[in-house]
Image 1 (cartoon, rainbow, N blue to C red):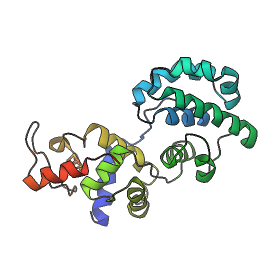
Image 2: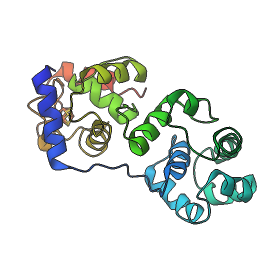
Image 3: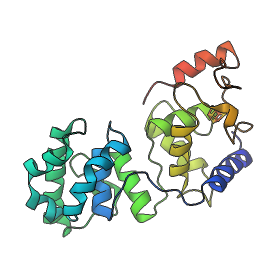
Image 4: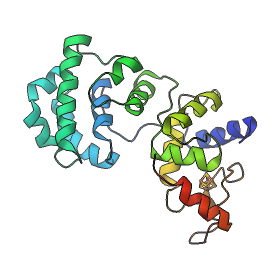
Length: 232
Ligand code: SF4
């Protein structure tokens, strides 16, 4: 995708959703960090169901320590991998209280030093809570970047580096949300809904699907689609 096409790609996505936000529910930066940590290999809807009651009680790392690991588990037991997530969230709360005065640091290295916080989680928190121009590459953004030609790469980090280079202003802060929403609801993994895609003329995917239920445009497209749909 060329420079002017990338600008137009985001201009259209931004036009249809001027104020994009994460679908995770949270009331402050600490709750966002916990919600994103819990959302690994889980849906935002499932996380929100569990955190509504949890966040009514827990607003700070000290509140989490006061609740205790067993209390936390009781709230999040419907979320996959809840035992290890609970351990990480408790260890994280302890470090935040001990080393950061109970605050969430606005720094990627400090964030990724916390238990259970990887680069993607740190990028989401930096972007959503601190307005940083970070690109958290999840499965949707990885697929969208590769399919469209916007940011190709074999690993999430390679795609992130491409996005860092290629996403123009004024879309750098919001691009993460627009790409996730587009990947989640339009450029879906199994059958991209190209027939209703607002960036269809800009997208370089060879296996576009012109009509609902139709096959990909070319046999090569079908093959490419399979290869590109591998999760990062
Ligand atoms: S045209 Fe199809 S493959 Fe390209 S971004 Fe839109 S939905 Fe995805």
